[in-house]
Length: 471
Image 1: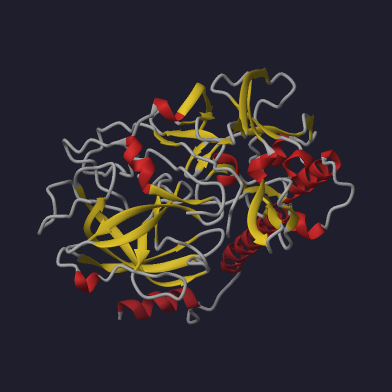
Image 2: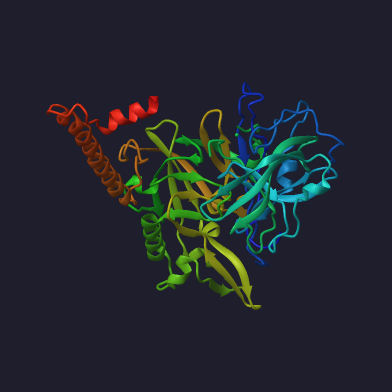
């Protein structure tokens, strides 16, 4: 796992609560990330013969942790591999006899799916015909993401997490037979484990104290679909962008481990690029670097991080009158990608524009120990003991700060950056009004006609219809 900042995700108990046990409360699951120095980079138990006696899954979700199936957090951390460029994945065994797959861990989706057929970008897939414990459900499901989609057949089988648990689970699983821009070149995983809310499952988990330091700062979950939070402002090198706080939350602002970069709405992205360029010590920089179409290279004898400013994100605290600040250093958003010959190292800009959300992805999450606490509807951030390069921290967290100068609610009712929705809404209202007026006129016209004299031998369409119906 050589290339970028190393991982990793999380002491994670990847079980979603089922309807079979609704009374169980959800404990938080946590995401500590580890960052390695930027040098020298380039781009288990076996299930038994039958299903275990555990509750069955109703959705594409992991079953409950069986009694006595205690989790070892640190063992699970060792099981997580990957990097922020291609995602963090977990080794699991599926079926009987077991087939080994690498599963992407994603807090921005809520389905468990694995490749069910060969694909040019993956090296293995789950062959249902080889598993004696696989049971088809008889229907297909299609899932679309902001980037990519897949269609799969739903069934159930036995799954074992190779480290951290000492037992197996019976789960519902989608086997992907068709996909578009889902499996990509260079990915090391061949399935996805979504840990977001079931409206889009609850999680059993806990907190591992050895993986963070200092206090845990919590921000409320605004809506239980994605892990949607409220962002109050951004600073570049200590200077606020001075945007309306609703711009940061236009459409939504979420925390998503399945997103590689820090993604920003276009207006916010443009302001960040301008601020980073102005605060950096580089007088001119190619536009292609900011848009992601070009890499920037430096000699191996130097690193570029001293040229760039810190980026801070302010989040509303549980006490709505206060906020806290998470800060990433350039080591997290100026990301090493490849070596150019023997003498140069090339980097990319770890921030990109987004058309539909602000997404705190791996670029930011690598700097912190992140806690998804569904029971209390909050997301926690703490300084990660893993977020260091050569002994130097690459992230900071501090607070509290007053929110007196910030709006009481920064989450807009309608997206600010999509005024066309207003136009469509008013247009539809006008059309509905015209249709309603026309219907009223049509209803009144027959009544007026009945007041005039009529030939008793002549019947209107309505009476003819009734007469013929009862013949």
